[in-house]
Amino acid sequence: MGRERRPHIGIFGRRNNGKSTLINFLADQEIAIVSDVAGTTTDPVKKSFEITGFGPVILIDTAGIDDTGILGEKRILKTNQTIKIIDLAILVITHNKFGEFELSLIKKFKKQDVPFIAVHNKEDLEQINTNTRKLLNVEGCKDILPFSQISRNTEDIIKSIKNTIPESAFTNPSLLGDLISYGDIVLLITPIDIEAPEGRLILPQVQAIRDILDNDAVSIVLKEREVDAFLSKTGIKPKLVVTDSQVFLKAAASIPSDIALTSFSIMLAHFKGNFSAYLQGTPKISELKDRDKVLILESCSHHTSCDDIGRVKIPRWISNYTGKQLEFVVIAGLDEIPGQITDYALLIQCGGCMITPKQLKNRLQAAIDAGIPVTNYGMAISYVQGIYNRAVAPFSKSEDSSLDYL
Image (cartoon, rainbow, N blue to C red; front, side, top):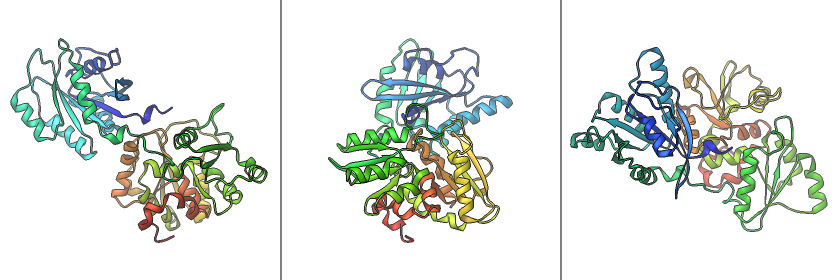
C-alpha cells in the first residue's frame, strides 16, 4: 500500500543510451526490455528495488528525450511529467554526447529541485572526456560515474545514490509525535461504511496506529456509533481524538471541548503538505462566486461510490455552504491538471497518503505560485461544518502567524 511513498529515482537520457540496461543491472533483474531499436521504452516503467543499507526505492525507466514523431512527442511528455514525482535523477549519456537535449532536461531538474547524477555508459567503447565532465559540473551534477556492461560497476552508482538522494525522501518524521507522549491515550474514530475497504482499514488509519505505537502511546480504535458509550462507560479521557473527516460533526458533538480533536486528513496535511498555505487558503471558501471552478485532487485512483467523498460529498457540502453555482473538476492520481491553473478559484487536495511529500509539494506548488488558494479535504470539510478552528488547533501552534483570522 505504501509503495508510492518510497523514494523515486528516475533514469533519463537519449534513446539507445542504455537506460534500460542500467536499470536492469542496478536491480539485478530484467525489469525493462532491452533492444538495439531506438525508442523501445515508451511509457515510464516502475520497479521496486532494495538498496542494501538504505532501504526500498522505486526505479523509473523513461523514454528517450530525443524521441521523434507524434508518438515520440507524447513519450517525451510522459518523461518530463516523471520529473515531478522523483527525488533523484540519473542522467545517462554515451560517447560524450552532451547538448541541447541534456541541457533542457537539466533545466527541468532544477525547476523541480531534483538533484541529479550522471552515468557515462558504454565506457568500453568511449571513455568520458574532460570537457564532458566540465560541462556536467557547470550544470550542478552531483556525481559523474563511468559504466559499461563489461565492468558492471554498479557499486559506485549505488554509493552515489545513497550520498545524493535528499534525506527528506527517506526520513519518516512522526505524524503525531509533537502532540502525544509516553502513555497518552489517542482515540481513533474510523467509520466502516461503503467506502471502507473490505476486511481492512485505510492507509491513514494504519499509519496513525503505527505512529502512536512508535511514540509509546495507547491507541483505541472504534466506530463513530460507539464513541458516546465508550466514553461514558470507561471514563477515559483521551489526550487526542483523530476522526475520519466525514463524521466530523458527530465526533465534535461526542468529544468534550477540552479534548483535542482533528482528522486523519488534517493530520496528513500537517505531515506532508504546505500547512501554512492550507491555513491561508481554507477560509477563501467563503469568497467563492457563481461559476467559479474548484479543482479537487485525488492522489490515488479508486473505485468511486455513489456517495464518494471527493466527487460527491465535498462538492455538495461546499455548494450548500456557499450557496453558489460552482463547477467542480476532479483529477485522480498524478494526471496533468486540465487547462491553466489560473482557471481555478480554489484547489482542494486529498490527504495524499499514497504519494511522497515531494510529489504532493509539486502538485500544489503551481497553484501557490499563482496565488490560487489551496486547502485539504479535512480542512475544507471542517470549515464548512463550522468546526475548523477546533480541528486545526492541535497543529496550529507553529503556524500562529497564519491564524490571525481565527
